[in-house]
Length: 318
Image (cartoon, rainbow, N blue to C red; front, side, top):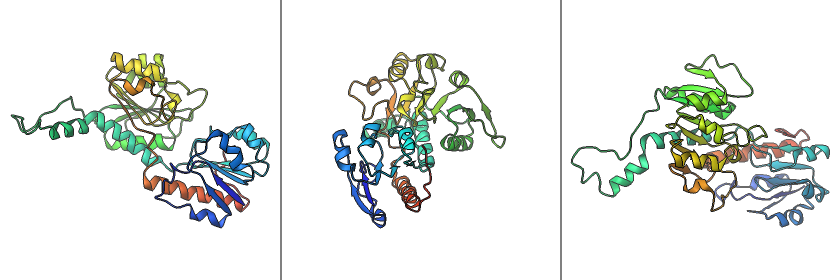
């Protein structure tokens, strides 16, 4: 069995190991693969592994020995899964490996806006506290999460984990989902529409998949309904947000701030308006990148390969 990993670097830049794969066959790991390199590298492979390197019908048709495609991600829109299904080739993803890590980053954004830790740490280092006439000072308004309304758009495992943490902070939670489940155990919780969340929430966090219905969900109309004191967090998929509409809302004071771990194009082009928008914190798609999170990903990946080789593939998404 020949196994080719097209873009293994972000998942494992060297602090983890691919050694477990050798019991399944001959393994070749590429840090990155350009579009023109896909076919030469995969034409003889039975198993192709990808994270963000696209596999379209064109590439798939030139892989005559292909039997299985394994993702190093939860999202699977980079692969033509429907065409693989037509050819009887399973496509497996990595489900639910980053739930706690993503929820942790959401609250890192929340507390960054409420406590302004970096701002005040920098001020202290610059001598502002040493020169202060009082025992304390603050450079910007501070706020508590307690009592605030949190709107969660997308209420799968990550959205529910965020709601769990919000309860510990004594926040009111509004959730929007296409699949409403039993949530009677939650206090200060209610289902709501996306528009109701926009109108009522102090913090809005996105945890929905990227679909035709959710692309540009956060657009100029949505933002026009938001409180000017509200903050938007996106750790889901970049195209769920209209970059220009969000930048305009931030620059005009229509929205208080945004915390983004994903953008519509990654890496972003230098002219992306959000890179210069007011009160916009952007991290480089790192919610999933903690060592423990990536180690969990590789364990599920190993299980996916083992299940396929045993004739019973799991986590199939096509």
